[in-house]
Amino acid sequence: QARLDYLVVELGEDTGETNTKLDAAEAGLADAESYERIVLWFEHDIYDQAVLIRLLDHFEQHPELHDRLYMITLDRFPGIARFNGLGQLSPDQLATLWGSERPVTPAQRQLGVAAWRAFRSGNPTGLGTMSERNDLALPYLAAALRRHLQDLPWTRDGLSLTQRLTLQAISEGAPTPGKCFGALVNQLEPQPFLGDLMYWPIVAELARASEPAITPVVTWQSPVALTPLGKRLLDGTADWLTQNGINRHHGGLQLAMPGAVWRWDGVTGSLLRA
Image (cartoon, rainbow, N blue to C red; front, side):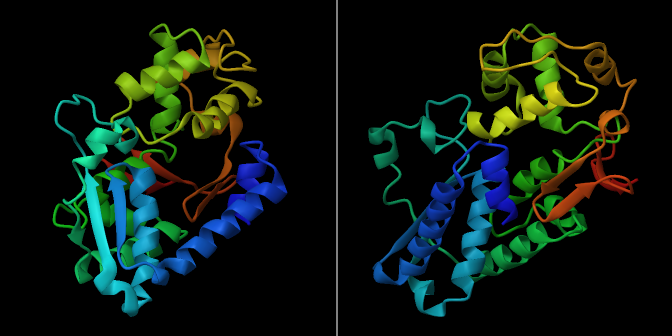
């Protein structure tokens, strides 16, 4: 229900259509047993890795499907200097990956169960522990979870990494929200994972908060600039949460004020509740 509410309120989707689409996705997953083989195609970023662990958790509960599960997973592709994901590849390039699938192992399924449980938890410390490991059965999961945690409010300024990179893009000359998104995807974001539809509410919040960090935006082409608060946030002399509070989900974690909020310490690379 929380996901449905977010898609409707923040992304402007129709309630009935969205509910039907979510139900259809669940029905398609339930129909997996009708296939001879199931090949999971997932890249390295947190968007894909979050879906992957959810699926592995699901399939672990269905032992009759274990010997049908295969996976193609990658974080780079020959000839592409900045690989953001499978969507960059042409049909011919995608075709070269067919045949590289490998059976999903018991260790990968079990890790999916543990990671999905941690992802849904109201306490992020389990994710913090996983993000520090270099021996996980899913090779890209630790880095993806670390990027997920970096979108918690930071101790430095209360901003998520995505929010800060947006302010940085504007300070470096991006004139519109559309150009900000382009700067993140092509240059600033260390692990691109957001589509433009998912990015828009982040930009909109920076503009519509009671103490905005950027000037008002209506469309992707709206002229945009930093407010005095936005400049102070980039300087590290203001705190976004102190000015505007917070009330949102981050995975299974509910971030809300008043009260202590989980933050990311960018200096130590660790979690702190304050």
